[in-house]
Image (cartoon, rainbow, N blue to C red):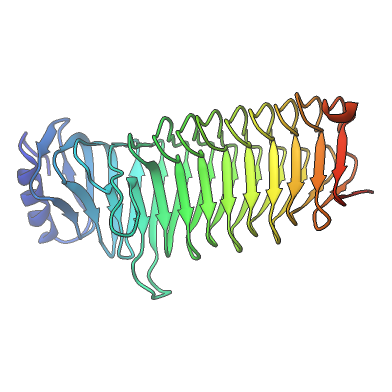
Length: 352
């Protein structure tokens, strides 16, 4: 079904008509722009494909997707010009596919503190309800908060996507039951941390770039049960740590690049916080390349290099409950004490 140019209300009417035709209905926007501030929620409640056009959402208008069957957005640009919590809100156990889409705007926190360009969430306590977003070659940016927020029983699977230049975090994955998987994505130059994983959430990232955060970290992980695996990712040049794993979170790094942070390269802090890294470069940072303190623990396996820190040590372990285990890895040319390593106040380094 190809649509003529019209307002957002006209599009809403077409969606209502499509829902009565059954599943697998395609609405072709014909390359047109649909603009307006009514209805406040452009609701997609049935299986539909929306393609080839632009939505200019004014006021508090946003796209709400709560469909028990698949919804496709293909080649759609969605821009918000008001103070919506989310420009695209995926909820209620929906399955949404986005291909070659751009979402800009959103981010005014709602009563639960959530907000961003795209939200994937579930308000239900039922373990059978899972909201899912699958996106490929999409851009998600918010000028006031994060590009993507995944929270509750929700999952996002991203390929070749971008969230760059957000005012807050690039991506946020929060709470037990939420997860993120991403391949070959760029999440860089955001105001806070490029990627945040916290409060029991999980993430798996491969070939992703998390560089140059303006005020935060490349990757920040917080809270017991939060876990991430990173393979061949680039986390360089961030304002604070390139990777910050604290308060019981854990991460596994393989063949990653954490060079050149304005702070520490890798920070592991807090009881239960744990990092395993192998074949990973963590060198040339302004402070220590690796800092473990306050009960954190890290293991550097074969092939890690932690050389030439500007002001600190190659690796530094601080406090009697903190530990670092090193196997076939190097720390040379650290500025601190003229050597590559430092143990302070009982910190323990075990060389295998």
